Image (cartoon, rainbow, N blue to C red; front, side, top):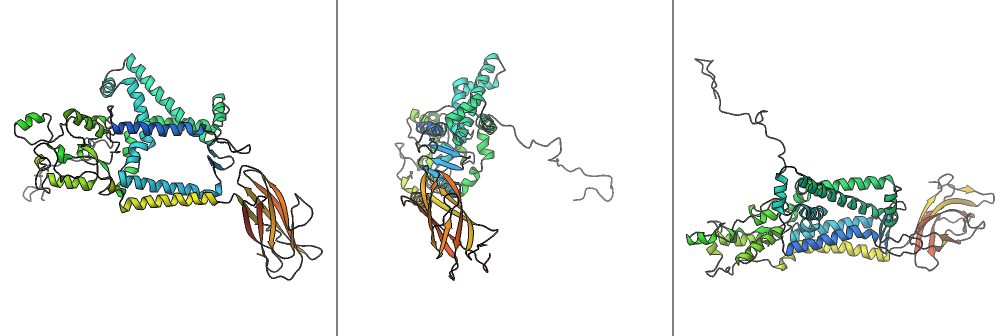
Length: 522
């Protein structure tokens, strides 16, 4: 495009365009947060959320205080991550560092469990059991108790600062901080004896790491659960992005059934009197008012939706008052929703027509599809369930049959052998006998193979023998220095077994070792 003419090069045309990124036109990179004031609601899903919240919080806060008698040589705390002795105690199960594969197995089970739940019932984890959801619910209980329900909180937030407002805010935030302190305190009780650590915390004798952990968890609980709330789920959590790969057309999600809700009308009786076709939705916005994420489920599926189903409770309450059937907002699958929507719109050729989905008496036509629980048991969910159960069963079987006695052997590297005055060869070994039960026991150590060889354990005896009985401390590794002596026999094999076995013959462990001689130094 020419900006000037050849006859008059000074006559420059002015283009009609605005610089989008000019400083005077530039928009803020991040929009300020608009507070969400969720309204309290009642219903079956809200009751279920109360139950889940009480159970999860009860487990988290009370589990460290449960006692479990393991005898005089082991801690009596049922659930304990003992970092000092590198043990994990869970009731009758004790996990050692070399058994970390159990933790890996639990992580694999957690992954398959999340995949199973998401593919079957959508983001049920996010809506009911996620720690962020649980603590936000707890903080909302405190906020409603102090400041009132939605309208009262909005009025208080918009009003000027006063003595009453300041008092309520101080009480609310102080309670939130107290919850954060209790949350951090409960966490550290999993890593030490809870009663003893509690006394140490209040007397100032606890380790600095304990106070630091409590401070960090107090701050994160207060900020994430009290101040950021829905922003954590929207901007910080990766699960909303991952869930798209886990959902399919048969996954349950919270759905606004616009095939029966449209067209919306605040005054449906007047609209019908005028001959207008209206649906069940009266556009009351009850579903929006109760949503903790601040979204409108009627806009369709949103990444922000955590499927807490509070909008279902709110809508069902409105339908009950109007004498209409529940389910305008409901858990539904994409396949059944698409089928019903196709019926209501004549396969997309028209807008939603209530007459296509209702009989003259207002009931729904038989062609309408409803959720069937059998759809959960499809190949995808069955695969996840089988994988989850298989990992769990393998871990249980391994736990039931695992040996609680282990042996590690290290051959001396310098010297690798010693030639004695009588022509015998002596090799030195360091044996580490691991007694993985919380009771002391006697363990028999013996040589198998290596004809003509004997061993000596200077700590227990000064004479040579083929076997010794040693005392193994409970839940500890006993380190022994062992010398194996072999007289010249001309035998070709230099391999043998160290065998350990407790006196009750309940546990047994072996280690294949090598006896070094001249000419085969390694």
